[in-house]
Structure formats: C-alpha cells, structure tokens
Length: 168
Ligand SMILES: [Fe+2]
Image 1 (spheres, rainbow, N blue to C red):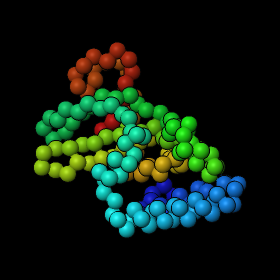
Image 2: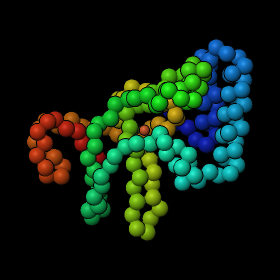
Image 3: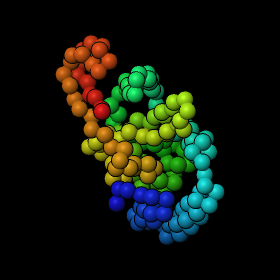
C-alpha cells in the first residue's frame, strides 16, 4: 500500500515492525505508535507545529521566482538517501528492523499573498524506496517524472552545458 490517510497510516507503520526481532520492543513501539498517532489526530496538530518538530530533518535549498501563474526553481535531481542514523532515530530504526532510506525528493514551501502556504515534497519517479519511505512521507500524487534533456537552453533561457532534467 503506497497511499495512506490519517487512519490507515497507523496500521501501516505498525506493519513495518513485522521484521523486528525483539517482541518487547515491538510491543512497546506498537503502543507508542498507536497512542502518538491518536494524540496527533486528537489535538489536530497543525502544519506549523509539525514543521517546528521536524525542522532539523529538513535541509533543501530552493529558489523560486513567480511569474504570471507559474514559478520555477533550479535544484539537483535528488537521489535516495538515509535519514541521520547516528542518533536516537537511527537506533530506533535499527531496533525496529527498518532501513533508514528516503526516496529521492525535494522539499518545498510555496507561498503567495492572500493564500495559505503549501508545504510539500516532490518525489522522483523511479527512485528507490518509493514503496518504503522511512518516514512515511511519500504519496503517489507527489511523484513527478524528471525528463532528461541534452545540453542546450534550459527552461529559464539559460545555457546548460551538461544534460539536465525538467519537471512540469
Ligand atoms: Fe528530506
């Protein structure tokens, strides 16, 4: 299952404990996940509150320019990578028998005067770990095709001396 909603994600996360070899840890984590998810649903955790809690995991540069009804930014085409594993999160993942990888993705916050900001990801189609994102952030609707182009003129009119990708 690749699509989760507020309810189904709890069982999906618990299901990922199936490889955990420590019954006591599995029991504790199952209860923790159940209560934590219930808590998040009960208090209706807001996006800013969530962002404040996970800011240390977020690190992607972006540059955006608004023009008419569209915008563009330039970035790398990211590949899969692990979340930090040298701290408590890494110990928890190892204990759960889970890998630490996230599929290739770009974080973005899009804002405009008079509109609520949108905080989201863009996932690279075909990236490894799309089906098992370590932090359960992947959604099918956020997967984008990156089309490869030979060196030439980029979407912003600039000369590109190396192959590049575009996403529409
Ligand atoms: Fe990330």
